[in-house]
Length: 81
Image (cartoon, rainbow, N blue to C red; front, side, top):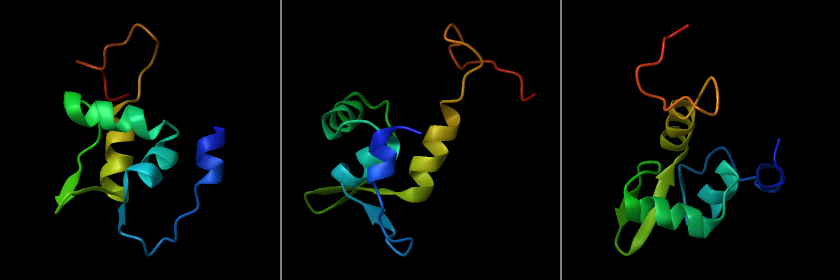
């Protein structure tokens, strides 16, 4: 387990996470999450006014979709096994 995830302890009742909390949840920097958002490659987010928020379910779904068998696996056309 990475150190970022160990530091993150949001209450289970918290439905939406801000960029800083979502980044800690995923174990990346807030700047990385902002860049992914700009590039359109990161987890889904919601705009509440000027705030970008992430749901736990969206973060977990996105993370699960990043599963690879090897470093050369592009993630496209993988077997379900």
